[in-house]
Image (cartoon, rainbow, N blue to C red; front, side, top):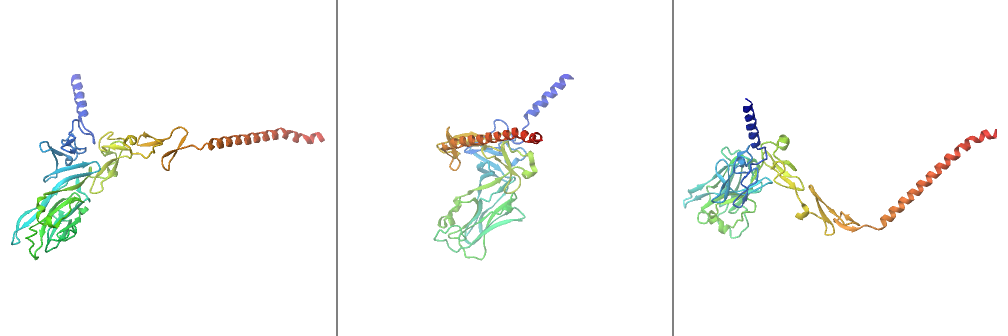
Length: 374
């Protein structure tokens, strides 16, 4: 019986030692795939990613050196992951092509389920084509939608940008949040045919600044481009920092911040610390501002690192001028002035003590004088 008890305790301790706390990843986790770094809470296996949310599981194709996430419908290739709560992925462009009679000859559209991710405000919906509109909407019921309209009868000879003549763009509605959504493009009926110079309409989401419209090139040949970079916001959990309290996965020297879009929270290292704020117990480590050159000490002063900060030190006989963090020679008059002040104070103090003592010795004689006269 005693042997069974010892065995049970040993098994229990072994089991307990293998359990991972929130924010703690297993050993020997893959840290990169091709040129993409894999940072926690993302990981390639349950012991390496945040286990309470399968959205953070990523897959590495070692042969292709390609990292991808699964949105519930399809895999999206990952461009990079940032600790600040952003994930860049490639998303396919959609198109609708028409024949000479104006009938649809080929069409594609895409729908996505983002899970714990949401579309960032750094993206825009763009349409390339004449007499058409593009729409990004919640998948199925279309309770929320964002779109733009482009009208033209001929390709513009001047490149005036994406402003409605063959190309339009619009902000992505934050109401799309983490819903399932789809992208589509449609040609408008009742307009003259533009098949000769614009046989297809194209619609896509893209990070701001990644697409530059060229009417002579893109009205016909945009089909040579199949995908664009898109920014997704990611966060942990479904509740705010106030609601999660001490149960967040934020490490020591880190703080919890509410997600800017959608639900959940993110973690940030405190000022003066750097690292992965999702690691526990200490993913955020002291930043050596001095060695990293991230200080404002002048050449005349010496930078000294402190926990979470730094200070500028001056040589002996000099003082720090905080207006420009430089060292200046101490005013030699100050010691003299200070010494004179101290001596003067002592002289006055001694004088007052002498007066008080004299008064105390004369007071009894004054009190005895009347009795002597009598």
